[in-house]
Image (cartoon, rainbow, N blue to C red; front, side):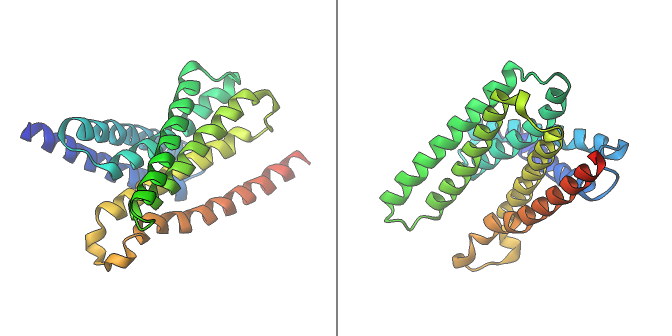
Length: 227
């Protein structure tokens, strides 16, 4: 069991590091949709896949880690939906695996919301875990719901809907991967206990405005191209 634990943990760490490197390359280097972007994007996806699988194996076989479970599910579903949308755009027909993943993600997020509420009530609304559960529960369930709703109305989607769905999902997964790195290695920053929430929130505070900026930039670019 000790050997298995070391293999799982080190492979999890290696996959996480690879996802960070390839995520940076995909986001900031090379042309979007170009050869480099596609190649590192595939590596990013499969790295996140192993981060997800190894995390579940660690939680199931070795020790329960609440944080690991939350980030693993959220980050992988974002990467999965971002990867799958490139397949769906060709047929405009989501497959069973897409519907199933969206439903499971909504259920997981909803369960996390309930857990967060119960945790806060039991701890007089002074639990960091409770608040984080509410935040991640909301975004996880919302992500699954948005995709589920999009599948139901896929024939009404705008022309470049898949571009923005891919960008939002992949960058969301990348932000989650950065969050995981900062939280897991929080000791190196030597933050006081009262600022323990910063690594959880900082990547989103920086990343989401950037994603919004890129989305606006591409919307203008696509609108000019159709004039």
